Length: 178
Image (cartoon, rainbow, N blue to C red; front, side):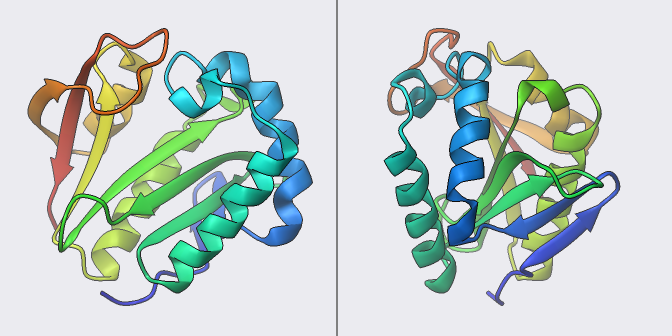
């Protein structure tokens, strides 16, 4: 695969590679978003410290340099940090899984859909042969995004890993090919 672009523009949002100096802002928006994220993301349910933000950025940098995963800050038209999204090479050779979350003040505006569309296009540009989005079946809002973007539901499976309070324990896997 080819290296990913460090910045992607997509309608109302810009995705940019996370930087070490984003730690304080990342910590702030995650803390403000914890009640919104905790039902769906196990890492959010267990609390979040400023050291978690710094560790995430360190790991994101190492994964980017290694060409494994690509983590982006989502910013709005004025450059304010409003969420995070990633392309992750964890579904096997040639595949990328994408994930996303937004600060609750920025949901319902098409930002996550725009971010997922940009990541999907970028995954194919760098050489992926498939892109997947995985979410718990109870997370209906997250599932609307792959549907809007022309992904196809390929399977339902038992949840993998730690579960959060809002999850039903079954994952829905969506896939799109070029």
